[in-house]
Amino acid sequence: MKNRQMMEQSILDSVLCVMVKPCNAKEMRSTLSQLGVMDKTKKTTTYGQVVVIPITEIAFKHFTNASRTCPNQNVDDSLIYVCITCGKISQINQEATSANQSCQCIQFKSCGSLNNITFHVAKIPLEKIRKKQLSPSQRLEDVLLLIFDNKNIPIDDDMKEKFPKNWEIHGDLVLFPSHCFNNDIWDSMTVEDWQKVLAAVGGKRLARSRGGVHSDGFRTPNVELLLGESGWVQHIDNGIRYSFDITKCMFSSGNITEKIRVANMKCDGETIVDLYAGIGYFTLPYLVHANAAFVHACEWNPNAIAALKRNLVLNKVQDRCTVYEGDNRQTCPSEVADRVNLGLIPSSGEGWPVACKALKKKGGILHIHGNVTSPPAGKNSSRLPQSMSPFVPESNALIDNTLAIETDVQMTESSLSCAFSVGHLEDKNLPSCNPENVPTKKAIPTCNLSNTSSRVANVKGQTSVDTSAHSSNDCHRLPDKKNSQQQSWQNWSYEVSQQIRQLCIEIKGGDWSTHVLHIERVKSYAPHIDHVVVDLECRPIKPDKTS
View 1 (cartoon, rainbow, N blue to C red):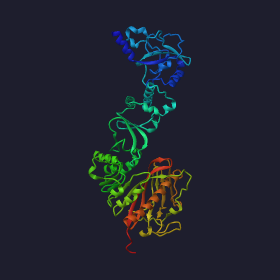
View 2: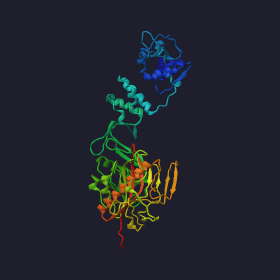
View 3: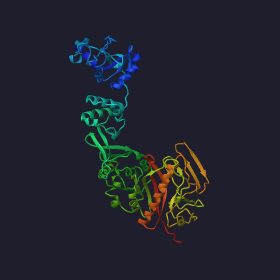
């Protein structure tokens, strides 16, 4: 009895391997790999005079047709040999093992031949085989191959290529991307199969994306929960806790740079209106880090509203925020905001009149998001269209502290601090000038750039260009490398500033001036399309009492 227990433990503490001569090891590894029977969790190693290649139990169905003409000569009598027909051990130790573990074949054969390479199959002591560190995707591939093999579903290389190579991790929930599950083979997966998958990738809950969004007007993600009772997850970004139901709300990790930028703004004492609040992407940074006095958050998706209210409590800022449920064109308060955030892409245009109405009478700052298309490099001019040619004052005079024209144009790969305003310079007693290609007072407002200096600095230290004394036509030329892209951002911002100024005049009355403070690239949305934010200052222009 004691011998049997020791033998059974020895079997449990051993690794199933194919043994070949060193000169045949590379070719045999290739053959076993093509058959999909290598145990990738363990390393190939040497054992005495042979090379041992760890294999899985699946291998025996391929060994059934292996040639057995080779002599059944053991490599090492101390090893536990395995029959290549039934996958069980030799009857030599039958007295020390149970019947279901030993070979019952008429002739025990542990030796075979694949591609004219002679091999033996044996159990090698575990301590002789080093474990191989596998990536999560490799572990998942092994598990899936075993699952489909047990279902007798053949997997070719093309199907294997579509196995998940990466996935999203939301706390203890793993979300697989949609492109991995387009084949009908996935319909055969059971709860037990998904549990094996979850064990391979880690986590306690499992979900998969079905691709796209539902046509419910709220862009609800098409996500299926495979394992778990709830889709609620939590993220921590920049010290802020975001909670949401992954099957009902989308989470954009790509706008983290903009959330950090908002968090670094100094909004002490300010009142903010967030027109497209969602689950609190920007509402929370304004409250938690930027120290805004109060935020009016507008949102119409009931699932996002539930998450937003939950997140306000999680971050202990619920007393400094009011949530307005429904269409912000009807719910947004008027004349309360020092700043308005319009974080909607591809365009927040429908919210521009609402934003202008929400600004205080003294004006404020709009943070306008949008997708900007840039033509390929060399496809357009590096200059503004003629209708947008800048008015260049003869002196370095500034409008005033609130509408000062920037004397520098600072650019990086992701941002552009611009130097133009839209308004009437003569109202501020600046030198008058009205070139033929600049619209008159009653036409489209002028774009004003200072030509005192133009500095281009790459924050990554790649390039630094400093030029001065440009002509009025060259003062806005951009560096060739980012010329097309950044010129498109600038043109878009100019158009936005014109339209916002006109809306302020129509909605709030009187004359207004708009000034582009900064342009920020958040992320690439698609080829030649960038998610961009323009910081636009809007102020009423007081009439000249002397005139």
